Every structure is written in C-alpha cells, then in structure tokens.
Image (tube, rainbow, N blue to C red; front, side):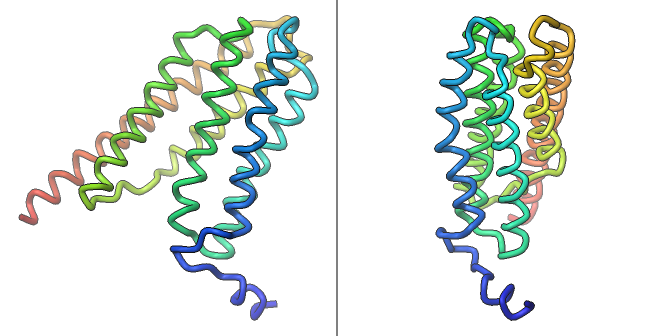
Amino acid sequence: MSDLRTAMRFNASARLTPANALTLARIVLAPVLFLLIFEAEDTRGASWPVFTLGVLLALTDHYDGQLARRHGTTRSGAFLDPLADKVVVIGAMVCLVMVDRYWWVPVALITAREVAITAMRAHYARSGMAIPARTSAKYKTLIQGIALLVAVIPLLEHTEMPAVVALWIAVGLTLWSGWQYVRDGSNATTTSGSLH
C-alpha cells in the first residue's frame, strides 16, 4: 500500500491529478447549480435539488483537499481550488440576490474582498513574493458554504433570520481573513525591503 501511495505522488508542476479532476468537476457543475437556483425562483432559490447539489459541491471541495495532501500539492491545484471556490460561492450568491433571497450589500462585500485579495496575491506573486494561504481562509470558505446551504434548504424557505444571520457571519469572517492577507502582504513587503 505504501508503494502504491508513493507511485501516486505528483510533483508540483503536475496538472492531471485526481485532486484537480475533482476541482474541475466543481467548476463544471457550478452553472448547473446556478440554473437550479433560477428554476426555483418561486421559492427564492430554495429546493432540494439545489441543496443536494450544494452539498455535493462542498464534498468535492473537502475531498480534493484530502487527495492533494495524500498525492502531493501542485501549483495548478493551488490556483484551481480557490478559483473553483470563488466561482461556486460568488456565482451562487449573485443568483440568490437575483431571486430575492439575499440582499445585495453583503454579497457585494464578499465579492469585493475576494476580488481584491486575489488581485493582491497575484500582484505579490508577480513580484516574486508568495502570500501563503491562511487557515482562516479555509474556515471562511466553509462558513460561506454553510450560509449558502442555509439559504437554499426548503425547510427554512419561509424564515428569513437563519439565512440573514449565516450570511452576515460569512461576511464578517470573509473580511477578517481579508484583513489578515493585507497584513501578511504588508509584512512581506517590509521584510523584502529590509533584505535589500
């Protein structure tokens, strides 16, 4: 068994990996989720098909991380995994705004944070400075996913408070983790400057 695991290890430049396959499946299935939300417009996005697919997408996020740790993390996976998270989360939240389940302000705050931090990390990467992923960002993605599931579960279709509270908790954690990345970037710049 240990020989099999060794044989299945991938180097950092690998692209065709089991983890990446799951991540790509998440991106491919995202438009299906969006379509199901629109089809459930009469219930403002809440339906069992939406909820079930949301859970499935969350599971792929969990298992692609496990596969990456087991078989070796890759640069392509480090790029694709957060991209898939953003496509699913922001896309689903925008759809829920459009079917009047979510208010646009918290969704705009989450979207602005995601775009800004992605752009910041890309800028530092071009300068040769890596800003490593934070554990708080993983928790942030988890809470965002939970907030989405709360919003689309049919049992809570006629109740506003759980979806509103879950969404604002996600906003708070999203902004908090974003501030941590800004601080990390500032520290990296200071350290880099002191080395010159």
